[in-house]
Image (cartoon, rainbow, N blue to C red; front, side, top):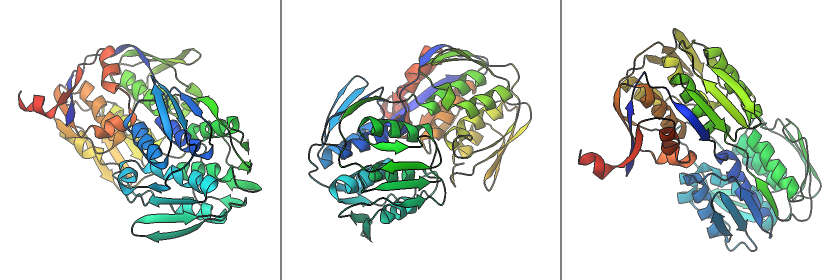
Length: 426
């Protein structure tokens, strides 16, 4: 097993340039969408993270052939040889549920393990199943698996009870090959959903309302191959913006989409950071000597993303005053608080609210990452904590950040990936 080791310093600013990788949450549905065609789909700007390789393992089991060349992926599924997403793969990555819609649409059957709960709270797939049932699918739930079949999906009107990114993506993909028109209401508006729509349109899908709450899809008989460039990862970019603000540094970010990060940028500016769009696809963040406290409420896009909640919590530990973060998307997404307390933070949790009292000096300690964004939060905290911080269970980190320790090291951070064996020999 591996760990992250950081020698932090409250007085050491990060400086330099970092290139942001492609969006993990955009490439996963794009890979699943390749099941909708017999032709090749070529994706560029893919992040080389664990979740990508997990879904590619699943795709290979289903019958896909793929080739990775640098940050480019070519994938083709001429014939599906099986229709099952096993429990082991779905447990490793909940996004495996995204193969359900494409398998039903093109092949009329699918067997997918129920994801169950996860570290950041329950994320039920009822909205996926309800929508697919309205399109004409039948489900049997037994032995921990969803067994689905549909002779032919038919368009209809579906209104989501609440916004669901995965549910919106699954239903859009299924509807592309359904007979007639499907109207989806109360859709998730995240940029990753819009990016999937753009890919599907290139493949021949007929979709109106991209990026809006109501999306109309007119089914076609088949889709073809295409090439598509995955959008930059707004959460990775946001994490580096926080790193610049937190360390009072000066960081240039290349390959970003500022229009996807409006709320994040607004909140950072309110905290005192200076953020400029230097040129198209480039941002510069300069930290302030004084970080202002603020209240933050997570909400679906275009609101403040739940995936940035943990990173901002670290920033607020260094604010001059008390901040409140309200988490409205997932229950149990404050598990990182206990780890921040080990570093010296002053945080109290009351239900869906975390009260952060700053400014609090942090000191290095051994910690454990509880989920993907908690991993990034602990790295940020370690950068400004005095002394050595060790982060265990970094397999979470590798699910969504490509070489983050190398990128931080280029900015001047004292950070390295170490093996357990190396740590024991210290």
